[in-house]
Length: 196
Image (cartoon, rainbow, N blue to C red; front, side, top):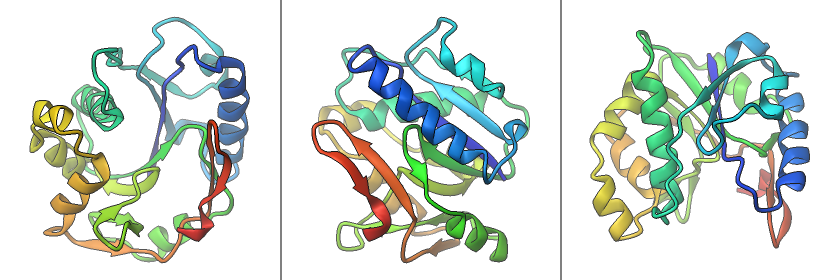
């Protein structure tokens, strides 16, 4: 399993975000080797502290200020990364940067139950999936991305969580009861996602 660790080094609260990225990334090293992690940075094109992490760093250059739907921005970054690779027929753990895995329960569940296209957590009364952390086969992820009308998604502010849920209903999925994460949300503080 490979990790896709997404980041957006925007200037808003940069120093706070930097600390959160560092904490999250170094916690991730408790569960994965550096060579199994790719950081997908969608905003910055310049060398920055992410380079110091010593793993694969992919600058997607897909952060467009005119796009308001963050899900569209994330899909654009993931698409550009996947299309740059020759082999994506394996499992990716997608983790939103700054989110901190508390333990390896979710990873263990994935490893103990091989063969699924998607592993994740249902949210919003089982009508969406949590996209802060999930695992998916790379070919399935690219198929999902290529299936989306991003202009329609942006215009109607349709979220990534709902679209992914609708798409993977026809796939071989394994849903878990919880994913143990801490998510820093500006203006709110740390949210303990063990409750979702």
